[in-house]
Structures are given as structure tokens and as C-alpha cells.
View 1 (cartoon, rainbow, N blue to C red):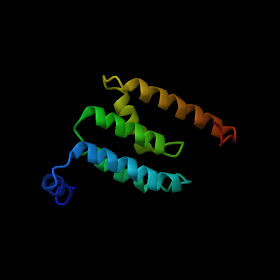
View 2: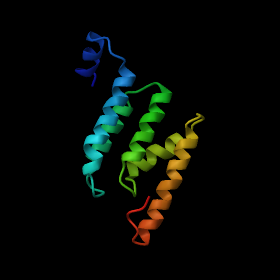
View 3: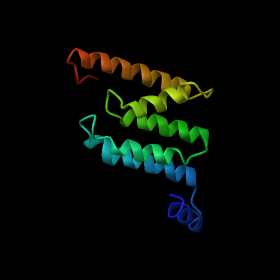
Amino acid sequence: LVKVIHPYITKHALQKEELLLHYIKDLLERCSSHSASLFETAWEAKAMAVLGCMTKIDLIFDAVLQIMYGAVVPWSDAVEQLVKQHLEKNHPKVKLLQESYRLMEMKKLLRGYGIRNFD
């Protein structure tokens, strides 16, 4: 990112944070829909690496929410750790994280009973 992306962003006067968030959203659209198993989570590592380059807290929370929504349930340890880390922060979007976390817990419970598809 430092060697290629930052010079490109500077040269073209792009908004770094918004571009990185857009990349995460695009990555999720392209990859998470193809992930049917727990082992197909290479996109998670990419998304979290990009997230680590972000500094604007509002956009970081948006990125965490996007990762949560795109991750296969049950979440990988990395996604669960990311979410728990941000649940402890003092930010208005923490309530959205809490709701999504509770939904994931419910999905895990339902999967334990063999219920995989639900609305």
C-alpha cells in the first residue's frame, strides 16, 4: 500500500480514507459471495490489512460493519476479534455493532439446530 497506493492517491488527489473503504466494500462484493466455507476467507486478511491503514474513526466503523456483514457465520477468530475490539470503543456506531453481533450469535445458535437459511 505504501509503495504503490499512496503515491497513486497523492498523484490523483484522491481521498485516501474513502477510497480504502470503497475498496473494502468492493472486495466484499467480489469475494464474500463466493465463500461458502470457513476456509475461504482470504478476503478477510486483505480487508483487515486495508482497515489497518485507515485513520478516520467513522469510516473505520463503516468498514468493520461491512466486514461483519460479509463474513461467513460463524465468523473466523480474526473477524470476531476485530468486532470485539471495536465494541469496546466509545462511538455512536457501537450500537450497530452490538446489534450485528447479537444477530451473528443468533445465527450460530440456529446453525447448531441445522437451520442455515432464514430471513
